[in-house]
Image (cartoon, rainbow, N blue to C red):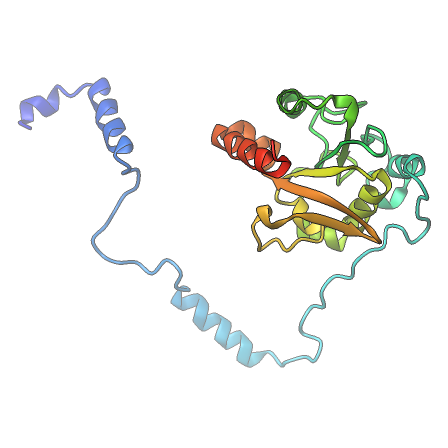
Length: 252
């Protein structure tokens, strides 16, 4: 390109050029010299070694793993109605207190128990009442399952962004969720969100598709784990994958 042409390069031309490279898959800056991105800075390494030599070792230097909390230590609800009351009033469930919690909904023995990690932001009187709930309604319509045949539940009583499954297990919510499933006694369980896997007693390192059953104190139920509803809304291809797995799981 001549200097004259460079001088007359317009913003539209520049945008088109950048878009072309982006479409080609080139969206990063590259250099000829190799870089070890995982290497620790030399100064930091020297400082750490110096501090380690100067600092005496203590027998209790390692922090012990957090102890699992028993949320049922005070009382364990005997039936589903008691569980709902406990869910909405038990102080140990969180530091905020009962205000703002969202109750599960549905009847025991439902055809399907649908579980999410936490209520949607904006849920008040009804679990899954916002955009994720509308997606669920369309899914159930396609599955030919009435909402009255579904038990809706969450692993946490209120909207909790960035909730980590392993942390929730240590906080005792895995035992609570599995006991909740036993009390609800559904015919099938559909769990949305990878963070639910540890709470269901499933190894998080394994594929969600490997979850087939949930067992809790003599109760066993067929289960399917799926991507989170928020992920499905952001990536339509996940909806197609979910639908294929649903058809395989139900044999329809």
